[in-house]
Length: 206
Ligand code: VGL
Ligand code: ZN
Image 1 (cartoon, rainbow, N blue to C red):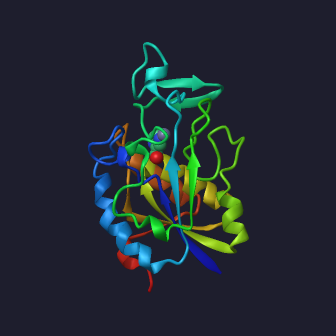
Image 2: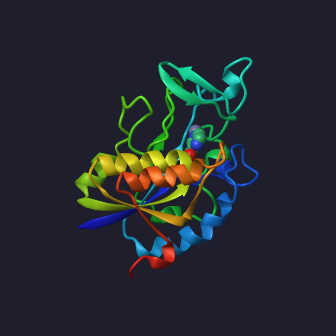
Image 3: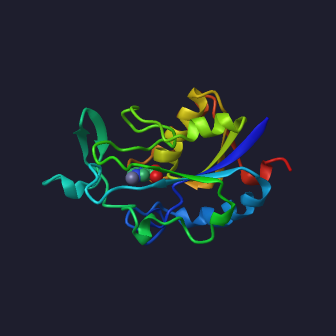
């Protein structure tokens, strides 16, 4: 029974000073660095948008970040332009030993649909390949760390459960946005209700 550490969207644009800064996002970096040597299987996701991505408020005249729209039939929160392909904002945060990553799964590349989950786009039409990767490596337990607790981490955790993985969220290795106050707390409850288990990095065995 193998396990994997999955680093969700730990990218410059989600750190303080970035285009879509997650409060205290940088605080997870030392925690993640300490986790890395404890896993043999480390994977990462990267939000990887084209410059004209439909989740960007700039693509919708009269709209602003935080507004809710219908994007091709799917509810969509609008964001500032972020994680544009091949920009420094899209790069993984410095301090992540990229050499240790077995694979990086990129998502959000289709301008017509956003992709919060590490497994599927928000319309659930395309898989990223992460699920197949985990299954082919006989990984049954996943530990999640990254940004943001109430978006990409949450949807990744819920899909991991739905795909049958034992799913752990490492609480001190995640931070959320709280666009609406309480979003992070609600996200944690929703994940727990779906069978996701929460742990602090210091409580992991070994
Ligand atoms: C994310 C909003 C937009 C995330 C990505 O990584 O949680 N949030 N794109
Ligand atoms: Zn995004």
